Image 1 (cartoon, helix red, strand yellow):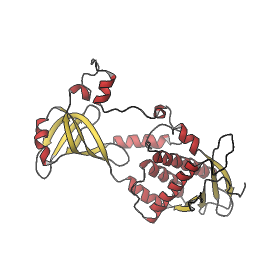
Image 2 (tube, helix red, strand yellow; image 1 turned 90 degrees about the vertical axis):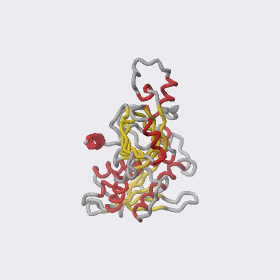
Image 3 (tube, rainbow, N blue to C red; image 1 turned 135 degrees about the vertical axis):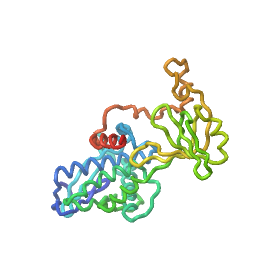
Length: 313
């Protein structure tokens, strides 16, 4: 295949005892190409401020901008060259793919920061998972290293980063850490413990298991007055590793609710759609692509089901 790098938006160099010059096994090639494409799409979603942890396919705009093509296979250290799937009209590289170039460069910098031990705090969880999956190609004895190379683009210099077993282990460590985020939880305030050293209460939502909450001393009276009543608590939540299940919420505010607002008697209620949306803090949908059905081709359904069963345990 051609040795030219014209049109290559990035390259992957593959090294290991099971890799011969200019050759790569079909199973390894398929895995690497699939996971590289997933990583590019997840990073594109992260840069656009969209959710990366979702069951549906990528939006049409990201598919249009960031769908990859394998355009070259070079000898020496086996090198896979990737370009963008361009439209029918062939535009110069400088005019088409600038967003794609930004995406692959951001991925290279992320891998580099993980390899060097730099604590890059803003790495999206979906991006981390996709890089972890890409790293699954280096867990056996055939491949030791996948080098992600983003070429020089405009005034930006070339970025090269190596994905090896230690890097994948660092990614696994970051993924296993509890996540934090702001949440709203509606439910019945079932119990409370007012011990000064351990102030806790429990919210029983309409759907799901009860959630333990902590609170400050100045909230004691409001918590006591709300016992056995429907409330909405807002605050910082700690999520369990590998899923989005809430482990604990530190209450920032607590407000009373009507029972209808947490699901009671909804079947016979005559509330309007606007009232129900307001009660559940539902905002207008900004991206209809999230309604697309079907399981995405770039996801492993067996791993997805295993994760569900493990979370239930």
